[in-house]
Image (cartoon, rainbow, N blue to C red; front, side, top):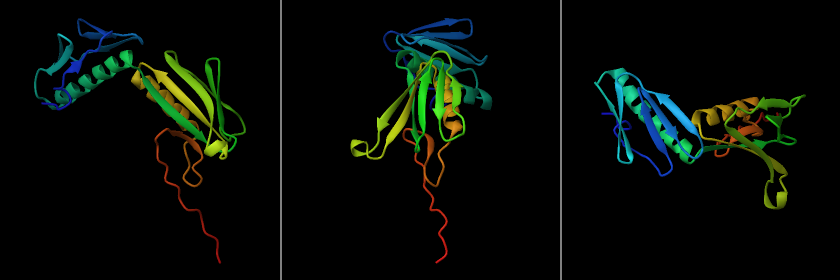
Length: 190
């Protein structure tokens, strides 16, 4: 039995779940998400729990069992609490700004990079002083929020891809808790 697949999903207050044919529809305060079930995976709604079961022990069906349970759990969490990714922009003169449906990034290129913000995602850009009293300059922070986990992660990856952190000075766009190992540069001859 799949360790993830056999866990029950608790339905929090304010979330409603419908099952029509082979489709699960999850509604909450943040939005509505749906998922089409595979043929050999079944979902039962009991009291305040969702139970995901499988018909047999074939390799593919076992893999889909855990996957289906995880996706339904992500949908329930998304419509009730939502998801957030925070990106830090580190570098002298690097900045970000939200302009209408666009996110403008100034990250050391000869031009500004404009990314269109997808629907159902909230993006905010703010400037925060670094160090005590702002001695280290100003750092730009981008907050990406939404109820669909995949969309939030996908847009955060697109933003990071514009200028990934480099290993010598640490400049670039990185996730909030991402660790970047700084390499030593070339040492000159003595």
